[in-house]
Amino acid sequence: MPHSLFALNYDVLSHILPLLSPRDAAQLALASRAAYALAFPRIVSDVTIGGLYHKPGNSALTQLTAFCNLVLAPAPAWLGAPDARLDAIQSLYLMRDAIRVRKDGVWTVDSSAAALLSTVIARARNLQKLTLWGSDALFEAYPGFGLNSSSSIHTLVLGGDVPPLPVLAHAFPHVRALEFVAGGGSCAPDWAIFTASGSSDAAALGAWRENINRIDTGYPILPLACPVRRVDLRNPLVSDTYMLLCAREFLRRTRPVVLSMSVSSELTEEELCAVLDGELVAPGLRFLELVGDRCNGVKDGSAWVTHVANTLEISTAPLLGISLSVTPLIPPMVLSHILKGGNEPEPVPDVRSERADLAALAREVAQHAPSLSFIALDLSAAPDAAEDEKAFFRVLDLGARREVKRISEAEGLEMVRKMRAFNRWD
Image (spheres, rainbow, N blue to C red):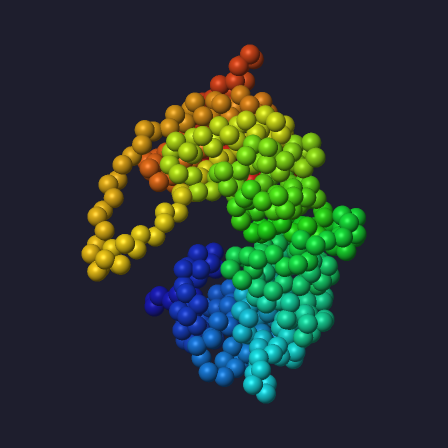
């Protein structure tokens, strides 16, 4: 009896197909109708359109139009239901050039392509993640873009120029995770920092007031005036009064349970405490991931951990867990060897400093934050640190004093995973 790939049951095939690249899946689909039906969901499950800047003409726009027409056309009976192609889409990534066309020597957005894409977004019942670059131009060219979007879209990723939050909330009311990507989207638009009152901003968010569960952004989004379970604030906070005020107001409005944030290692205790005020800003904060940006060695990193411990005592945030890590100081570029005729600079000896006493540091953090039950410390990124300069600890309450017990990395990572999933009832 000849062996056939299609003799395998679907449970086995479902483990094999994700191992194929979309290109290989496309080749498999050419073999037969049965192979097409098997491979097509893999081909369109995660689609990227655009990014063809090096190709002539309207290549990306042609790609978008062809894709939309393919998935919107009724599928043949042997493939399944009429919407079988649409139902296979799970993630869609749209680059800027995908909806642009050159008219009279000027690049502009093709409103008909925007309308076609909007139809796909509305009818793709299994579309879970949507990434849009330059979405402001989409809404400007086609104001109805995204209206009646699929209720399955739970993650919205935005880059480049972004329209105001009320526009996005109206178009994608079912979104639960919102991400503003780095690069072209790392600079805050004016609407993100110049805002009306909190009550006005909240009213304009519609369903997002109840639905948004997580936001990942490089800058504060002040109009997001509603509770958000998890907040990731990527750009390091520095000693700038306006920046700190914006961050403080952003956290006061979102009231996160889980907060991941990067701060300059030179931020004073008063400045950090103002941002993490346990009574006003973060009354429900349960897990804090704090990164000390640009620490100059293990000694500097250890001092920063002590600095954070003192801040926790002042802020009185009701933390159950904390993770503290550092990033290295960026060394200045040495050009002297270039200016002197191209001689290679002498190699800098690799000198390791004395190892930090991570248990003592964890004990100090625990003493200053009596609500803590878990501590993670990672100084391995410091310039003179060893790769294993990190540890995880459980905090033990022994009455008059608090002690820490080191746990394995596997157990520590599992604790981090669980604490990142904390909600307002933990």
